[in-house]
Length: 180
Image (cartoon, rainbow, N blue to C red; front, side, top):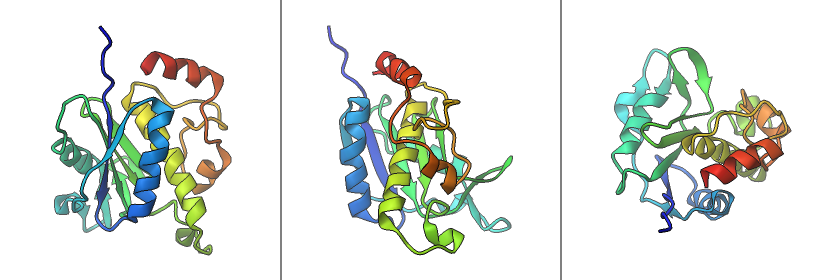
């Protein structure tokens, strides 16, 4: 009997460009051989905001995203504009929790404007796509790659994202086949 793959569910958090979310949903499904749904947006949880840091705690958002699952096997990925952090990190571009089956990506530090550069929607989308592939790879059980050209390489900032490719390296491709 063929086992049905869990689908990917994309959740806009707060005021996120729907066209970008829709484009991402269309693009990411084929990478993992899974269907993708977009849920109606939800607010970024107020309790995730840390007034001292002026950032949102990523783990609280991951826990809230778990609540939108219609099926425990779904992989849920939130996208937000807010600046995110974890207690041991100054900031994060994204985060995932394989146990919860949830991930979140922040557009805050992948925007050109954060670095004083002119706005560039195409670059923002490309960065979002790369980060989404990286986070969903984690949700399927893959670990970050050591190859800086692989889409599954850990990115510290926008420049790391720009330097890596949009595809998996050969090693990660083999892992992905096992995870599909």
